[in-house]
Image (cartoon, rainbow, N blue to C red):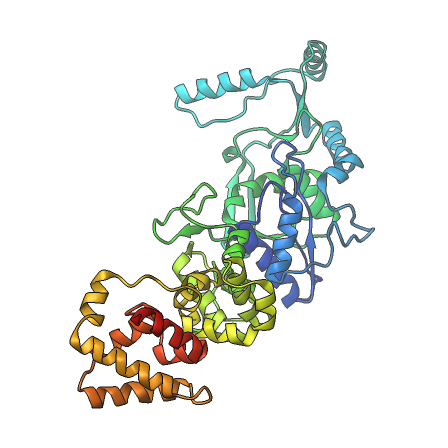
Length: 497
């Protein structure tokens, strides 16, 4: 690609970073980085009622956590394109200039219809089995009559919006990067639409055109739900005599279980980046998983680094079929990353033990190698997120369960159980501290099997119970070796007392 690529991610600061928005950011970032272009962050904050405190910071923090950096944005301003927040751009009159231009050319007009009037029109259309559409209130009027009607409404204290005059029976078509040829007729738009609200703020579909043009955006890559916005934006480009960027609309993200569109209202599905951060998912895994939502690499491999994604990115490999959000697949991807980056993720795993109150921060700092061994034995290879390790490691490493009456009767109060417990206790006590290893402990257990002619659960369960108070768990010799001779003997003595 010979042209200089400039793409953008333009979130609204109305909440946390959603999986769908993260995908938009990631693929725009990959597009820019693959072609040595520029990736811009622009904040679309004109919906003042929905903006939340900290919304912008949350978006940017989570993007950084995912490993997505940007060349320009609110914190990296290029004077040629700044500012990067739409409210600041509106305050400078950037949008008003073009609103006034469209009003002067007759391609836009002021509308004073009240919400009650609009509601009544929609209800009448529904009753008549018509598709909802805006009814032009100045039909048949000449310029003087329109001005007189507007003056009357103004005098009555009504506030005006500015609407774009949609051309009749006009096709808007584009070669979509993902979908191919797309054509939508102006009849499907729903009539004249608002480009400036009563508070003077531009609407999304108008402001985005002005910003993309003035910021020299070359490609707009976004979700499939924006297809219906594209003709509105194209008509603004045409009205102002500007060339539109190339558009690409990525496949919808659907829930794997239901096949329905992933919705922020689906409370049974975790779908915000921050939620996965809190659970202990790795940023590399999240990037990896999201990078395969609606895009397919060559071959069967599924685990990739950011650099690999950047190198192999190809916009022709976006899929048209809906992308399935599969939480189990995400858990698998994260597990693969945890296993391959175990040393890197170990501090995070140890911090989970601190968070659970199993160790102090001082202990975590001073006994990192020891705690890493516990985490390894507890079963770190089987977990899907770091937050799961504390539950696995609690027993028997930091606490002991009470032995149940059933286990006591079945395994410790029997003749075989008593023989095994006493013999194991003697052999463990005779083992020197230097020889207290998993291999030596395993030798002791095997020797007891030969000497006592007891094997299987009848051999192992009494030993497990007197040392860990559990009949099931990780590799027993490894548990005892890492916990040490004193810990093992203390447990045995208390149990057999």
